[in-house]
Image: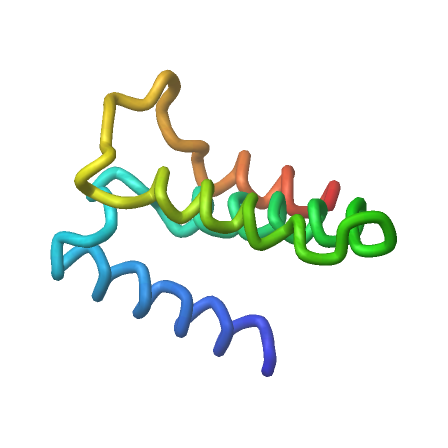
Length: 90
């Protein structure tokens, strides 16, 4: 899957979940990307010592994205420029 198609699919999923009221309304596509990258880093760090540990961290991350758990976020979302700069570092 190419990046543009993946980006479009991720945006579609995010918007659908927000419309349904399941996903907190203040989550951006960049927020979701970094949450997923965080879980991917957990997979990489734990796969040899605790192969299933990532499932716990994914569950924690998903619970934090739920609209029913929403609390005010401590910082504003990154701008498109900041997001691109950060993604280049990953």
